[in-house]
Figure 1 (cartoon, rainbow, N blue to C red):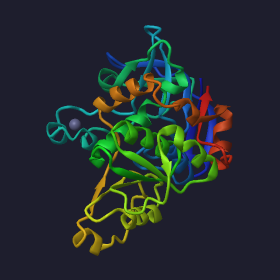
Figure 2: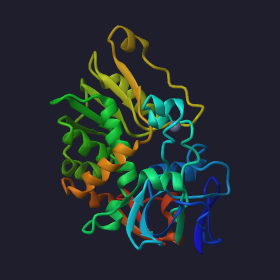
Figure 3: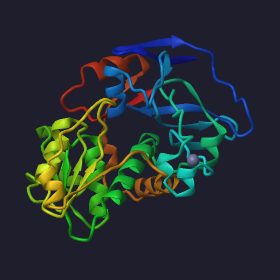
Figure 4: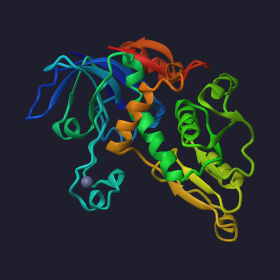
Length: 316
Ligand SMILES: [Zn+2]
């Protein structure tokens, strides 16, 4: 079968590889209908990604919708599942599960094997009316739902979102649904124009009750800590490179009692909630998919994304 294989920074090759075969009871072979590009893919393409990809050469792509070859059912699956038995899972801190790795990759391919551990916990049937490319948003939307939960948003809170990429826009929808007032900060004109459709006003975010960093840059982390009101909460949603050290404003943290929290990944509960949220049609999630390519088009798109690009549907 055809698959994209990641060899290192900027080196993504379309290759003929063996079609995966179920190895143990419960493994699910999926014929991929559509995979979606995301910001993590772009970061991994540019610089590698120790958490997502492991050492190269590695399979690539982790947002997808496809057909369970054994049953003919249309399904989505998350890229991991908590083990349920480690110390972190025992505390219900499932995103910190000691056995989360390796994350599932390989959606940029004709077939993908979902291991039994993920299939048992985080594989869901897609409602018949839902387009496959919308269903494939379940994993990033689950991360956003969990992030918004971590942010502890109270009804009426003004919540600034730094970064209006697909994640920032999904966060806005989650914030609005949680009763907060999302304020889209920064971003290029094309993205700011879409933000109101996801429940957001546009503004500078100054003095917001909660600030969510969704740009994944050191500058955005620092801006978030500058913007939040005294006593407010900053959520570090975007990951930085492993060795990054951010000089945090100690005065704000101590004298102004600013809370700084991180959010990583998703839990099975949020994966289920994300699929239901997509099915609600409450927001135009389909507008996040701006481009459509074959496997051969992914590298070019990640290397030089068009101005109006948010996410691409990759049809293998
Ligand atoms: Zn665990």
